[in-house]
Each structure stands twice: as structure tokens, then as C-alpha cells.
Amino acid sequence: MPAFRRDVLPHLPPDRHAVILDLGCGQGHYLRQLLSLGFQNARGIDASPEQVQIARAAGLTQVSLGDYRASLGDSALDLVIATDFMEHLTRLEALQAMDLIRRALRPGGSLILRVPNAGSPFGGMLRYGDLTHETSFTPRSLQQLSGASGFSSVQVYACDPPVHSVMSALRACVWWFASAAIKVMLIAESGQVRGHVITLNIVAVMTKGNGQAPP
Image 1 (cartoon, rainbow, N blue to C red):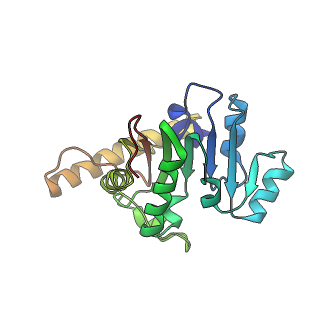
Image 2 (image 1 turned 180 degrees about the vertical axis):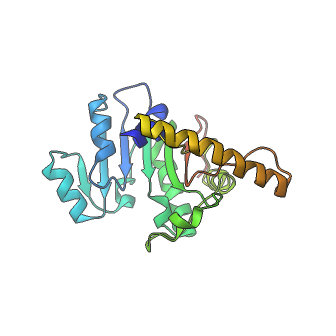
């Protein structure tokens, strides 16, 4: 899957015994990729009975039906994946979820988020394109979210068009030139040269520190 290779694969732990939880895993597409890579301690949870039924019918017994909060109870996780998940929560719920995730992670564990980018010129397409979306984010607000939740570091990445064919390579070239023009316009207006991320989605990788965790 191009999106998995772009957004998740570069940030996976090297240890194939790592304990991984995919929040809002849907039909388990990412979970299937993780299992194929040898991560046998990967599992997923989703609140949709229909999605879970499809996943289990396809043989993914590692997918469970339930509330994500229960799955984070007393876990000792190395990695949490939450793609297309956090935008369905209110700001208060997002802060509460981040606190639960940090507590469930082992020291040095990571969280991979993919969320709609409010800083994109077309960010409203994702923010308001789904009636269940409550929030969207920018690189700056993700840094604020990470800091408020007690994570020790955060890195934010653009979700550039993935290249997997001749046509997708052509699309990526068109996007590169168009995005460069948009960034020039933003620099001209704001005077800020760095930090402009304008893809529709952005990925944040947040790491829990190895020291004493905050309460």
C-alpha cells in the first residue's frame, strides 16, 4: 500500500517482537502489512462492527471490536498507529486520548498520527468533507498537542503524493511545481520562509521519553 509505505513504514521499530496497536484500524489493511513484515505482536481495534466483521472474514483475528480507551488500559506498547483517527475527536477528547496513549507506551515508544492539515490551501476539503470530523491540525498545533501530552519529541512530515507507477510519478511532478508556487505565495504574505507544509494530510511521529514520565 503506497500510503503505508509513505506514512508508517519509515517509522516502524526494528524489533519484530514490538507490541503494536492500530487504533481505528478499519478493515485491517495496515495490520495486514505489519503481519507480512513479521510484526506478530500487532493488533488493531475499531468501533465499527461492519469493519471488524470484514477484517475477521478476511482472516484477521487480531482485529477487535471495541472502544479505543479500553484497549489502552494497562497496555505496554512499543508503537501506536492512529491514522485518520484523531480528527474524529473533539479537542478535549484528543487531549484525553493522547494522555492515554502516552501512558500505554513503554519508555522510548512512539505514536504515529496522520491527520488533516488545516494549513493546506485545500484543507477544508478534508476537514469538512466528512460529517464526523471534529478537528484538523497544523504542524504547530501538533507540536502543541505533543508537548501538552508529555511526549519528549515530535517530527512532522508532509504526505506527498506517493510514487508507484508512471502516472503517479507524473502526478508527483505536477504537485511539486504547484506546491512550490503556493509556498512562494505563503512566504510573500507571511514573511516566514520555513515550515510551510501544504499537503492535505500530515504525519506526526511522537516519542515518549526514556526518563520519568509525567503523572
